[in-house]
Length: 298
Image (cartoon, rainbow, N blue to C red; front, top):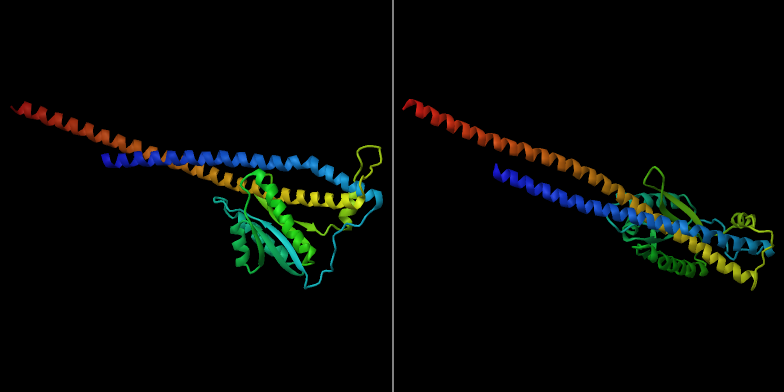
């Protein structure tokens, strides 16, 4: 009995240590979610500024966006960037976004050429038979997103200028109220006439007519690069926020399971301990009765 209660003490101590680790990971995941969501929120004002700049360029001379557009021929190559995760405890995170990208790309005419962000989603796409032409590491912090986006822009721009493709799509998981996340996609390129008209119709915040200094063409090119940067940054930050939401949910389930396990272990331990005390009391009473009977017989 002593060995049994000692074993339960060890189990209770181990479960308590594990609960401390899980709660620490919950706090880290919650903190990370806040950072990535704050970074997306911080983009709003900058996005508005860039869109106003593009609107000013389009209003001044209605220039043509310098992005060539091909027809939807079957031989066209489609560029795609798929954001995944390389961390554990995220459930089906990579499978969800990979399956979604496979489905959507399969419905488009042309052959996809994919850049994967994360080795796990990279392996999932390769197993599906897709052509993965590049692999990028998953950022581990907010300040690592911008360098990653810069690398993706350089890589995609080098291929686009060689006329390897003109269409680029982004695939990632996005946080969703009332749920963990959902897979979404966005056509990054080409920036077509519909996009141009939408920005042309943006209402200017003042009554003063905007003026582009230094020439429309040069300003337009820089503003488009910033617009693409914002789109990639937002997609990456939303993917990382979704990843940590998935991890937080997993830690919450683990915390609940550990609490239930601890309750069961403690109840069993107290029951065994009470049983041991009852047995010792029974032995004392039995011994006393035996002594009393022996004394009476003499």
